[in-house]
Length: 282
Image: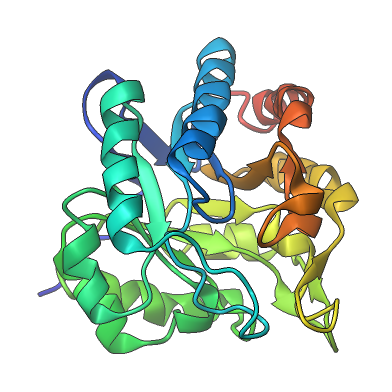
């Protein structure tokens, strides 16, 4: 079945539903890299919810129940699917916002979809046809990260797999392209190119500054460049911004070097809104 591509995608329900459109104010996907505990999730969520309400930004809370692509076996992976889904359900009841988490297998799609509003396809899995089809058939919004090994125009085939499986609610996410060893670069041309394919585009600011395997047994990162890349992406025009954040990123169990400190989020978002207003002025 062929489905017309959606230029506006809505996640969640009710007054806290979040819309993604390349011509509207950007919405925010934010939270810690992995779910660490109920108390930690609620602390981050409350801070982000208050901030986004004050700034008038739609918020999707993100966290991973399992970080399946760790650099080494010793890497911490999260609290697991069962505990995480219970916490996601509580967060939605308490705050009303939509939630997002990664899925890694076909089987996880049906388990996660009843609770999670946006299913995220990790970049390394963006060409896995069976996973894409299974995710699409849940009817949930799909945020698919462009593989580090793919050109932006190659995402037309990824988008087609999801659309032709019956799901028009797809976000295409840029998270950097592999450049030599342990390095990613962000090509801002990819944002309008992917938008031209007929989907809202999200820029993943924190994974774009990763240094995969850069610390030997774990991933490194350069969080000092998150603002620089975010400003560039917002100036180009995007539907959504993806930012992982933590109150103590240097001691976070995963992706600490590229996460934004929670206390720095207000200043970052205030700056980005100014760029967004200019980029989308009539």
